[in-house]
Length: 179
Image (tube, rainbow, N blue to C red; front, side, top):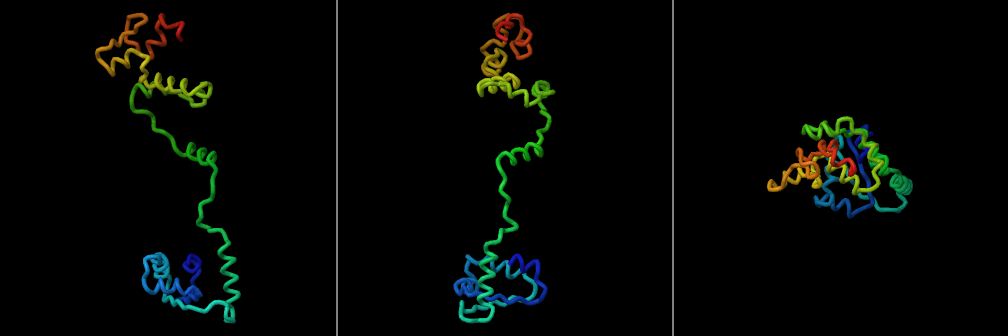
C-alpha cells in the first residue's frame, strides 16, 4: 500500500490476492481491516480487489508469490533505527538544556556550576548531601530545621552568633574542623 501511494501512475488500481479470508473481511467491513480499507480509500482513482486461486498455473502467480516473499523480508523504511542507551543519552544531553533557576538562592548556588566536578564524589550519600546543601534543604543545618519546625532555633549551635545557613557554616570559625 505504501508503495502504491507513492508510485501510483494510473487512475485505477487492481489488487489480486490469494487470501480469500482477508478479502472477505475487507468486503464485510470487519473492524480488523479498518486500517486496510482506509489505505485503499486513500489511493487515487478506483481500486478493484480480486481473489485469485493460489498456485494454479496462472501466469505470473508464481513470480508474484516469490516477489511478495522477498518484499516481506525487506526492512521497513519507516521502522525506527535501534539506538544504544549511551547514544540516546548523549543526544538528549546535547538537545535539552535546563533554564536558569528562578529562585535566587538556587541561582546563586549553581552559578558557575560544572557537573563534571561532581565526579569526585565517592558515594551516592555524598552526592545527596551536596545536593541538599546546595539547595539549602539540609536537615544538618539549624536554619532548615527551623523552617520545618519554628519551635527549633535557626541559630548556629557551634557559635551561637547567627542563623546556621550554608553560607554561615562555610565561614563559621567554630566549624573549621568539621569542614
